[in-house]
Image (tube, rainbow over all chains, first blue to last red):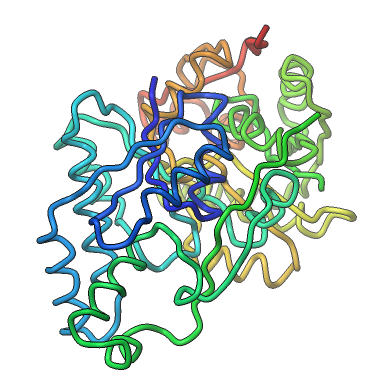
Length: 201
Length: 201
C-alpha cells in the first residue's frame, strides 16, 4: 500500500517517512502555491532521503483565506490549521490515495486535529490517516533523528522550508509588508531542514 | 539508548517494538503479579520476536486496589487505567531506565493518558515516554501487521494474554466468583496474541 506523506523537508515529516518505510511504499507530497520555489527544495531533500516526490498546487484561494485569518487573529495558528485541513482534503480526494500521513508530533499545538475530526475525515473520504510521530515527544524524536538524519535548524524567516508558513509569510509580505507581517508571527521560531540521510552500513 | 517496552504479547505492543527497533535497543518488560503464568507466555512471544525480555513483579496491593475499583465502578476501565499508571511509575523508578514505551493506540479509550499527565510523568522521573502507535488508527495498524506478524484473536476470557486484564479477572474470580466478575467486564472483547514474526528475506 502507498503512503502519501505530507512533506515540508523538515525533520518531523522526514522521520515520519522513515518510520513508515518498512510497512508502506512512501510517496512524498509537497503542496506549493506557486509563490516560493518550495517544491524544488523539497524535491532535493526527497532525493536525499530516497523517496519519490510529487508537488500539488492547491487553489490560491486557500492561501488568501489563510492570510485573512492571520490578519484577523493577529497570529498564524488558525491559518496554519486551516491550510493543513484544506491540504488533507485535497489529498484525500486525489485519485488512488488510500493512506495519508503527516509529521505532527505529540507536543505540536498547531496543526492539531481532534480525535473526532480524524474519524470524520477517514470516514468521509474512505481513507486512512496517520501521524507516525503523534506518540513521541521532542526529546525522543531527537534521539531517533541522531542516527538517521543530518539536520540544520534556523529561524523560520531565514531558512527556506517547504511548509505552509513559508509561502504564507511571503504572501503577507507582498500584501501588508514585512514589518506588519512580523508582528503577526512569533519572534523566535526554529525550523528544521534535512541535509542528508545517514545510511546504515 | 535502551527502550523499555511494556509487553503483553499482544499485537499492539509487539508492533510498537518493531517500530522502535531501528532506533533503540528494545527491551521488553512484562508486569506479572504472580497469579497467572503470564510472564512465561510473554517470554515465549518475546523470543519469537527476537527481543530480550524481563518480568517485574509489582506489589500485590496494586491488583487489590484495582479489583476494588472494578467492584466500585462496575466496569474495568478505571482499574486498567490505574494499573497502567502504577506500572509506568514502577518502571520509571527502575535503575537504568531512560525511555519507556507502551502499545497504546489512537483509538484506545483505556488506558489513556492526557498530554499534561505525560509531561508531568516525564518531568517527575526525568525519563522519556512514548506510545509509537498513538498516531495510528486500527485499520492502518492492521495493514502494518499483515506483512510483519502472524497473530491470533480470541475472546479475553479464552486466550491467555499477558496484559493486566488477565490477572485482574483471575483475581476477581477468586474474590467474588466467575459469574459476578463477568458482570463487570464487557461481553465481547477480542484480544490478540502474536504467534510469529514474519522475517523479511
